[in-house]
Length: 604
Picture 1: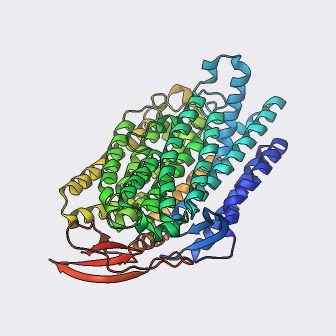
Picture 2: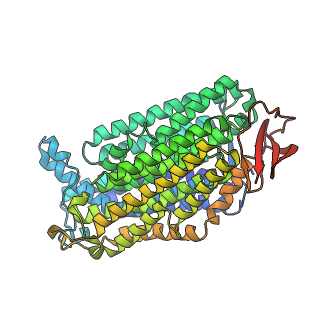
Picture 3: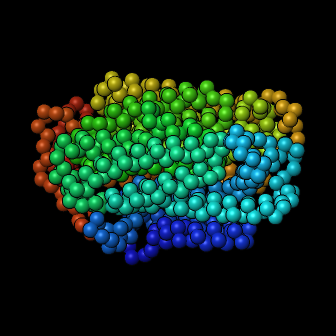
């Protein structure tokens, strides 16, 4: 449905347009006006995204299309794929605004002292953490009395932080709403630039080196992806998604292989998959924790969105997905195991969670490569549950840093009695990542693994069966590192230096509580997202019943497309024609035409 409203346009560009206002007003009026103005902008934008999502139901879509240039139309689209991504991105961005205030106040004041007192001593300036402005004495940051220089520096730096923050959030949203390949790439780069500056300006340790490494790897992945996007656009005759999807049969098979490889590698870098993950641990560790929450919870997972939208949806056709899916599946499995094993070897809280994020991205890749409606649907929902669970855990890390001045687990212990609310919310976040009922993590893993098993059984593939078994085993690693981390932080004897600490401020606890509540709500009512998600994934295969799963078309079986289904230029929707039905054993095999392409299903 193409709509004449401007909900998505306003939601996307209002943060960008008002970001200079936040900066100049924040410098003059102080940190409170900066925080609440940023919160208000993103809260309104989030509501504007939710409004058109409510009435879509299963399989519907909402689009705002505008004339643009010779590269096609500029459009913003909500459907079953973009809804969970868009709402999660802006919802977390809005919540983290509030969480950022006490954390960034402390971070900026420490930075001010380092700049003032370092006198060129780089090693002191690069300290990872210290107890300055922490609550080890039981006092709150609100009791601090700042001098004029501190206040001016704090106002300016926090205004800069929230200005970059707004652009960062806007770039992420635009990426998942785009309807044009060139538009997608512009937004993709737009979310990279502010995140680079946020790490460079406000990070820990050798933050300039870390930010450059982050930018380099992200840009390498983006350039590799760009090669595929350009080939898709030029060879299909246009850059609009609908044009590419309608004309995919015109792309030579040799170029299909190149395009698919560039997309998988490019988005694999974004997902920090095994072997192209080297940028992630330092970036997550050295970034300020509120930004780590956003990068880990939503930005990295956008790579999964790109694979589903640009590869599975736009390049639909015999073999374009199924010929490569098993490699993605195995790559995801390797990423799951590697990330989980490395997380067990860390003593830094943020580093444990960084490698945990690598493992979680492996789950997404595993589901994307499952060749299953349920597997792909579970991977999409896994993005939401990962965002909630990992968001809570990184917020827990920030809470502990704020109160204790350290993130080294060797210096922690027994904090469950000192920080009870943080401990409870952290447990909910940990159980979400593990996948325990009644959290949302259980519903994503259940559906994802169900789809992977179905496909292995239908194909009678020993490789897929072994991959499934190993993936189930990898969940044991997830349980191990989460529970081990939790035990070292919240159980045991409280160190003498931490006897007087108390739980974090309401800014921290309320925001953690909101995410914890959301993961429980989605665990009980997963259809809030699963209804549009499964409707979308089924639409990739012509609105097949939910029990139908896609199966690779075997070579040499004489299965040929018989006829074509046109794509309406107005609606961008492909129609479906059943061409023949055959029976084998107890299963019914149905061949459908999707756009110009043949898709095969098995009902079991």
